[in-house]
Image 1 (cartoon, protein in one colour):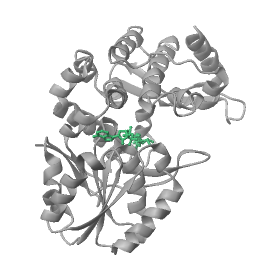
Image 2 (cartoon, rainbow, N blue to C red; image 1 turned 90 degrees about the horizontal axis):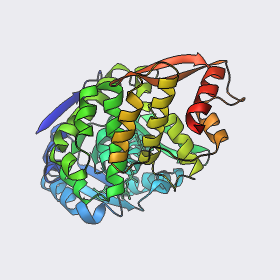
Image 3 (cartoon, protein in one colour; image 1 turned 30 degrees about the vertical axis):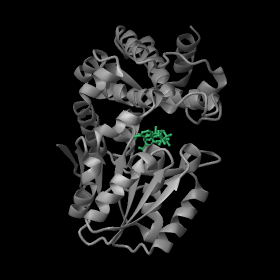
Image 4 (cartoon, helix red, strand yellow; image 1 turned 90 degrees about the vertical axis):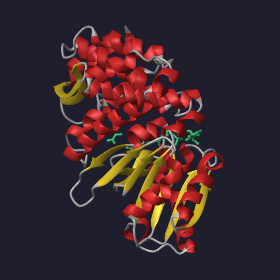
Length: 359
Ligand code: NAD
Ligand code: GLY
């Protein structure tokens, strides 16, 4: 088993990575929640038929009483009304402050279940059992939990760290290929922002089979990077912003596609390509880096370019007239494996971005 510790003062927790771990969930949760009697499991309609029985069986074998909410799969589930439903269901179940919540699923379930745990009874323990690649390398670690509002994604939320993160790489075998590859965009991002050798390692494995052969190492490396960033800047006021490399333009792509045409991962993949070219044109990023990223992105079948109306990009990057100030902070690559925030005059960024994006 591979293990990492997120050492936050008073809220330290482990990330455990092992094939078959779903069947041992109960004993690991018992070790961190010794006095809990009840666990409320939140999952979705795709994950439940695959893994819920195994996880609930393991929880029961460890002496927990369980109830499960099986929610519709998809981003629409991560909403305020669903949160209210969960609060009522948890009370019906008899959840107390010493009990806990288990998130079994992708980032949608992790974010929603985490926010439900953060708010029910003013906060109970929760355990993340992420089952998508994106959730394993990103959303299950770091304590950002949220629901979406009509005004935008993740607008109501909290920082609420899990008590434990249990990662079973075997769960990734049942992912549809596009969902697996969407997670790979975030995996590549870690190489870009933090570890150039890791980027090369990934670039040399341009297929799902090759990546799965080394999946424990990949999960461990990504979680180790995220862990270090979160320990340095839990509340996202400094270093943590480097995790947004490629995400600003990516958000424009997601919005332009009405959040249905492009997955988050596809949008981030194309966003990283734009950010790399922008950085090179601004003289921050070495000239060979954009092609390296584009090649790695394309090899995984992810888009290197997404067509989007210019106004949406300008607004997403904060270069529109409504955005205050004459300077803007961008996350750019100083070299492969090192992202830095760079403050620049908006006018110069706007001109360069236009040249880069419109070609
Ligand atoms: P998701 O949770 O919607 O899962 C994608 C699809 O895969 C769903 O249809 C799901 O039912 C299915 N699925 C999950 N596990 C499966 C498995 N093992 N086998 C087969 N199918 C499976 O999407 P996601 O990409 O995991 O997460 C996206 C969400 O994560 C977004 O809401 C995003 O805002 C959030 N997010 C949060 C953070 C954070 O730090 N909290 C970071 C990144 C993303
Ligand atoms: N996914 C970005 C963060 O956790 O900060």
